[in-house]
Amino acid sequence: MSRFRVATLTRRSVLSGAAGLACAALLPRTAMAGSSFKLIPKQVKAPLIGQPHPDTVVWAYNDLMPGPPIRVRQGDRLKIAVENQLAEETTVHFHGIRLPNAMDGVPHLTQTPIAPGREFIYEFDVPDAGTYWYHPHQGSAQVGRGLAGALVVEEREPIQVDRDVVWLLQDWRLRPDGQISNDFGNMHDITHSGRIGNTVTINGRVQETFAVRSGERIRLRLINAANARIFGLSFAGHQPRVIAIDGQPVEPHEPSDGTIILAPAMRIDLILDMAAKPGERFQVLDSFYRGLEYRLIDLAYADTPYRERILDTAIALTPNAIPEPDLNRAERHEVAFNGGMMGQMMMRDRGMAGMNMRDMMQKGKVWFINGVAMLGHVMDPMLTLTRGRSYVLAMANETAWWHPIHLHGHVFRVLSRNGAPTRHREWQDTVLMEPREKVEIAFVADNPGDWMFHCHILEHQDGGMMGVIRVT
Image (cartoon, rainbow, N blue to C red; front, side, top):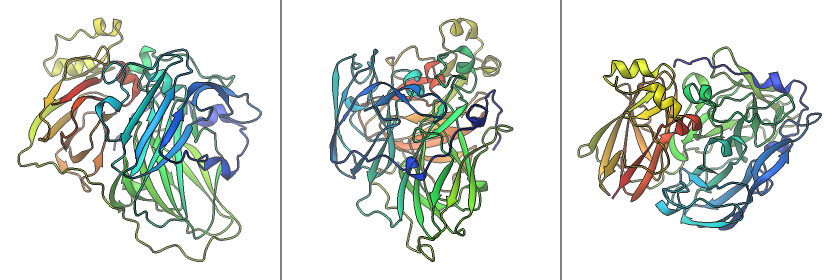
């Protein structure tokens, strides 16, 4: 897997001397229980870095950074009232959940944005167990300022673990005074790899250690809530096994090269068996960007073991009831992603010389799907699909940059990469595409409505890489 270098700083360049924090800070705050909740987005201060650094002004839900974890049971009906205490409009999108179109949280397309001081109620069933998250769909700055939270749908028959832990990863671009840089939407970020920050937090804090005990088994739910940063995580001295991707169960397996690749908006559930000796310590490294590797956190073993030996119970999850696409009868569509820095040359090679990149840049639009840049959340559909039919999208990344492609309202199988069948035929809702890579996905268009289809590097989305797929 090739990786492009980006102009960014390591986390430690800003956080040198940050104080170590206890394990308890890594565990999710008490999750909201039941089926009715309230979320209040507002501006607050949070100790992202810790003493002696000042608190950072962020946007948060319910005064918490990240927002309160929501835990419900598979099949529950979820009701969430959102009261907007920001000075601008917002929405909430429940990423990865198969829900009715009117509850999808896309401004103007599926709902009127929530005005300051107003309230909107989201209500829907949660059919699939797994790890999901919630965030606004109102421009990249709202996520970049902190608005995000975990949504966990628990299985009816969960696997046996000793701890179920969420790590919601966020990437911040902080100034030397510890405040968020206000350079959102600059053209360099839009045309290149997106808004890559200089500070990474786990559950809203810079963490030094995560306390573990010999013999325990942990289910670690990783959520990438960053605007643009792709993580490549390795767990020194351990052999994590992937059991779910984007909330959907997958055959348990060790990742390629031992590295967990987590693109923006993606979630990966791991089983971590703590097999080392008491008192030992191991690094978790992020090495996705070549030459910019850094230590995310340390696994710090307590002096006393949890038990003598690791659990030997099954770790495979029960699959969710997702309709299987009929590949023999599936309708096929070609989708090409174009644009960005160096994109004009590639588009010219593809016979798209009529696209004037300079004119589009003046409008802030430099990314395209099939040659069309989205100017807002509402536009004519790029595809109109028949409800209940199976479809294959043959997607080509004709750019020099990575793109995590997300389809709202549906889950798809990843069939192939560059013509080679995928080993696990993963169910996903966000698939990462390398530069110039071709990926085939398949799904049943069983959820009616107008659905967003976009790159989840939010600066690429704002720069035009977004379309509408209509299911009728």
